[in-house]
Length: 393
Ligand SMILES: Nc1nc2c(ncn2[C@@H]2O[C@H](COP(=O)(O)OP(=O)(O)O)[C@@H](O)[C@H]2O)c(=O)[nH]1
Ligand SMILES: [Mg+2]
Image (cartoon, rainbow, N blue to C red):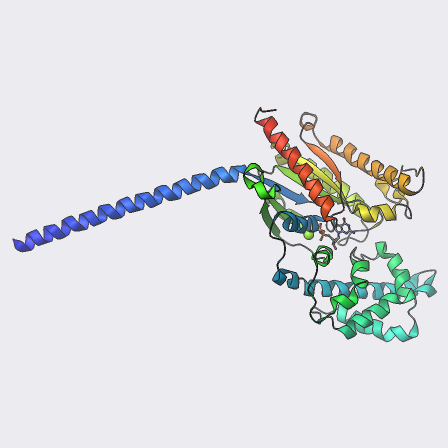
């Protein structure tokens, strides 16, 4: 009997134990559900921004600027993480220029000016061999001196002047003029170095930010996605097209006289034109009324180039007529390019969707102040659209 009572007691207490456990579990479940609900609500609040554009149009540079402007920026470890990238940029570029000069010295009508001076030939071969390796050595003072010597060779300078034919990266001049600093034993890359460093993006990276900064509550929360731009990367884009508030399409307007990295016969501007057309026609963006923010990027290079290389070398711009010189001509050329993109937008958007937001911005992704100003404008536009959609405007 005692045994039974004891056992019953045990049962009761076990029962109570179960009940307590149940209750606790319920509380936990409720808490989890509340959190999921909260997060879903918060997620709904988050606006998805997608950086799209061809390879080297400046997407990742804009992404880095956002990290610098509205997030924590780069700490010392992250900055140092860029050293191998920057050194790789140096080796790849000098190899490109060296091999390019050799080819021009053999095949060009004006071949003599591409022939390296005798004393630099050996350095050239050595650097070309290093630049062809899978892994590059650390850029020592000695190697940096070699690169500098070769860079200053007249034949390499002549080759660099034809950089548009050789896939020479835009950061070339900047890095070549800073070789001594880049090879210091205690070198820590600066913000500018990181912005100029070029890594071909593969896959997708994202960052969450609020442009208002100090007063986060009143600002929108954005999630920005950066993707690879080369042709083989583009099939990954489609998976990101759902629920996009705005596409930030980067077009490098300085590339009208260059060909693609992945196809030497294709003009980069023509590729951008086709890509923009394809993106505009995506049914997903039409249905969702996705806003389009077109960044006409690399204006700094464009304004220098346009006075030397006529816009009409590009098939899309073949009806361009220069009207003037200097600043006026630059503005005229820029407005012409802008108009071409505007026309393309209206051609490629179905008539009942032309009211989706479409804005064009002139950008230089390396210019932090300008990117900040541009993002404030993008933010304002998107907020206004939200108020409008909510019937408040
Ligand atoms: N001069 C100049 N260089 C730029 C500009 N935007 C990007 N770059 C450089 O162009 C290269 C390619 O840019 P990146 O952002 O990697 O292009 P992505 O392939 O579209 O991500 C990098 O070396 C950048 O530093 C710009 O507006 N002006
Ligand atoms: Mg990129």
